[in-house]
Length: 137
Image (tube, rainbow, N blue to C red; front, side, top):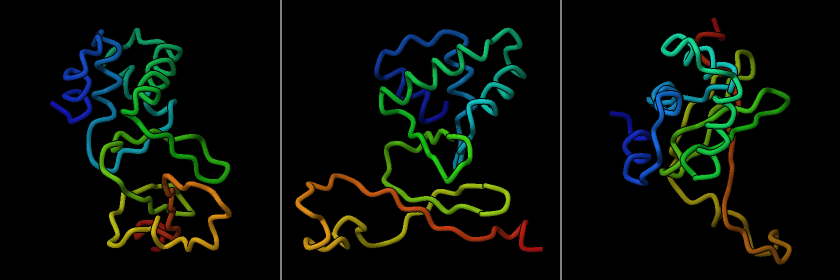
């Protein structure tokens, strides 16, 4: 069972067949799918699942804090099930592949007090950019 499915069961979230399929599609490491990609993979497992159901389920999972929305430039929003472990992202500027990365150090403490302009900073979203090995050849 995936970490996401396990967390949803522990929360007592009602796992209909449609919700289960969406959660199963999002299982694994370095998963950053668009809603359309989630729908396409979900219909392979459950052909009658609607696009609206996928979008609604993704929205619910984001609201529950079980998925992160990842937006990079003008590309479609992607959904990241790695919502429990703090991490940053590594983005290929050519193909759009995203990988989770866990650099050492605390990016939040790297922002000096003089650059916070009175904000109470609660989080950091950091994206490293480059070209992946597949696109570099």
